[in-house]
Length: 81
Image (cartoon, rainbow, N blue to C red; front, side, top):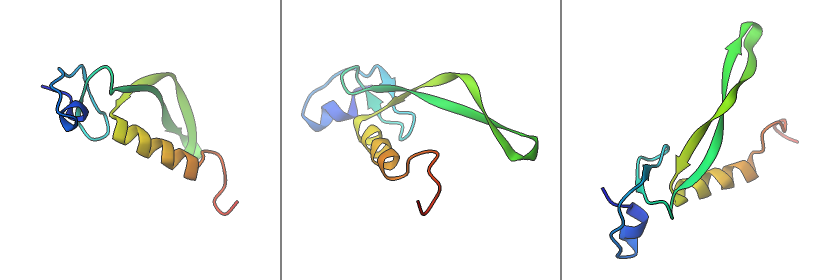
């Protein structure tokens, strides 16, 4: 399997991972590794963050989309603020 981003620029680079969002193969250069917080719901709909956080691999396209979403919709800010 080869990196999808590299294929777009006419390169053939072996993949070292798979994007957890879209499933595209990514090489080490195009992989964006981050952390993902996991939560569970306790009684009375209380969200509890589980530690440690999970490792997440994204392609450059999905990483950019997640960054744009985070900038638009920050966590912890009530709607309409």
